[in-house]
Image 1: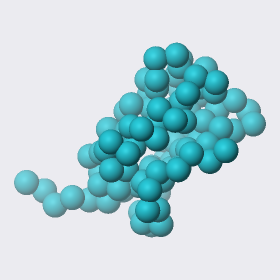
Image 2: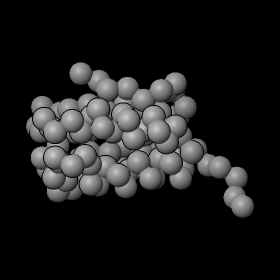
Image 3: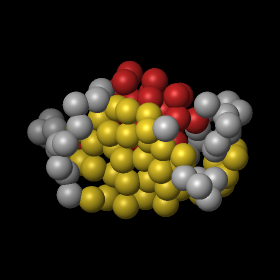
Length: 95
């Protein structure tokens, strides 16, 4: 059994991802997994998110983002692993 490793992933999600409850669904999924960070809509139609926490739930949430909620159509996810900071106490939807 390996020790938990904290990670930080920065995601940019493209497709039909605005107006389909992507952000609120992602918050529910993050809260269920104990992942912290934020999600927001971008002016160009993409959704951006930063995920922090234990590696397994963070990667599970990133995998969820490749599908999104039922009404979404995810075409592409750009993912960058960044140094873990631990700056968040919860997962927030930025409006």
